[in-house]
Length: 96
Image (tube, rainbow, N blue to C red; front, side, top):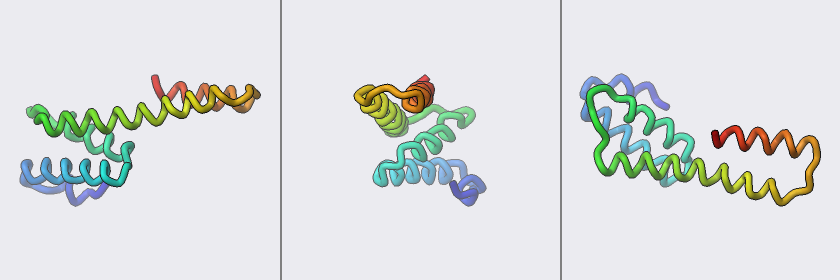
């Protein structure tokens, strides 16, 4: 993430740029990045999220969790081996 946006003095402009970045990440289907950007907005002191920002937050986490759940379902279809068991644990831990 660019430090240029984080150094903007005008708080409203900074907020608008973060929302723009989150939308861009959504279009690019980079939901992990979108989560990181939205986390910055959520942790912003003294403000609450707008309805649009709450929707972006929901989309980001819904897609990240959805991809991990799909991975778990796919891995359940394969025959068990020690390596696969450890990998399933790793993917399952990411959901916690």
